[in-house]
Image 1 (cartoon, rainbow, N blue to C red):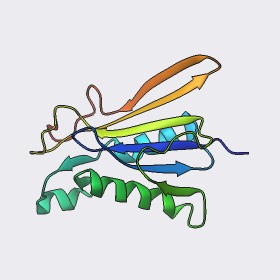
Image 2 (cartoon, rainbow, N blue to C red):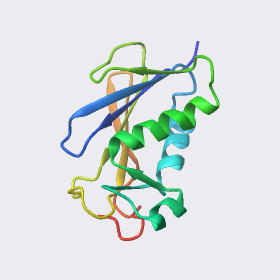
Image 3 (cartoon, helix red, strand yellow):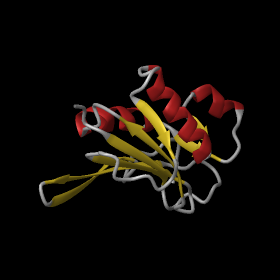
Length: 143
């Protein structure tokens, strides 16, 4: 049996827009590390320039970022392993939940930082850990 996890994506208004389910390797040293590594150098824009395209690290808003993350993780799991669920999906066997959102200071202008946090339970104790985006994981002056 695998360690299942959810990755929950929210937009700049805090509205949940999609949930990605991973059937195995969902623990912090697996999915958490891979997700943070993929997103750590990325940044958000609202519109983009040729400079943004050349970095290969830009996402044109959260909808584009969701698509990039799903593509990245599906490359290693072409059949099964990674599934997309509607916003609000929970309680489907996940042990870890990862939250991906823009920094609260990003207003849709310029470059915005991406914040990733993880939540899990260890017995009755709840844990929360920031994996990237706070406080100093900026890109090119992102807020």
